[in-house]
Amino acid sequence: MCKKIVWLLVSIVLLIGLSPTAFSQDLKVAVLAPRGELKAGARWQAFGEYLSKELGKQVTIVPLPPSRVIEAAASKKIDFLLSHAPHTVYVQEKLSANLMATLNTKVGPRFGGVIIAKKGSGISSARDLQGKNVMSLKFKAAAGAYIFQTFHLVQKGIDPHKDFASLKVGKKQDDLVLAVKNGLIDAAFIRSGLLENMQREGKIKLDDFAIVDNRNNDGFPLLHSTALYPEWCFSALPHVAGEDIDRVSSALFKITPDMSAANKARIEGFVRPVPLDGIKQALKTLRIAPYSG
Image 1 (cartoon, helix red, strand yellow):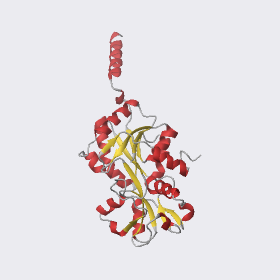
Image 2: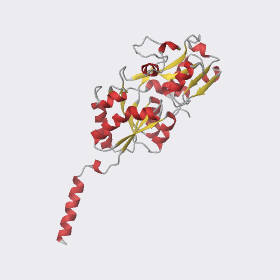
Image 3: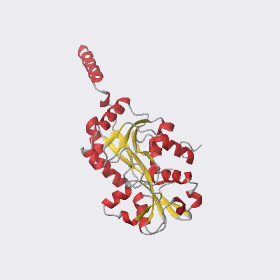
Image 4: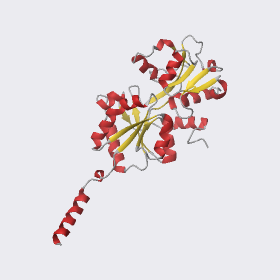
């Protein structure tokens, strides 16, 4: 009997001495996949491996198209979210998510939207889009391929849903670019940096496109048509343990440009959260969730 009691006490001491992370589950990080889930999975694989090593537990990257992000967050299918600012505003205000960091790229922690047309089409300004066939990603769900451009146009007195001949929805931003290139549509909404990436990949030539309302007076080096907004944000869902949040946060801010996790993801690392005031104004004006009521 005494031996049983001794072993019971030893077991209790050992259990108390173990770190809480020994009992916590593996973590899932959802990553926005505007160019398709396969591309996103390949891009962020090394990032997931880095987090797994830093935390000492499996961190799985879950690439999601824009339309599936909110459902995954609300149903607790994911633990952390790396996505655009509109998604971040939603999970903050509706799900009480914790904004941890903003993605930093080679051009900084902000990006914009681009409205492209085929060179020689005569489309160069917002007014030229009236009566034209245009394509974006899913309405109200895509930041750099719908929300930024729609807010930009509304500020100029143009309603894409009323003033265009049509506003169609594509599945991937690459498809939108190729549709303009091949003359299938007149114009398209895409995020800044995509044209430059596709040219590096040998898929297009920048000279084949015209940039509608081209901006070059704010020091941002990439082609863009709209104002600039915070880059993708890294958030923790409210069910995640505080210790996991602290350890992931520490790992994020350790990333440097020379690391494999940064190189393969084409990022510089992460910075402290960039204010979301501008995107909140856009969402309120367009009555997009969480301000759609």
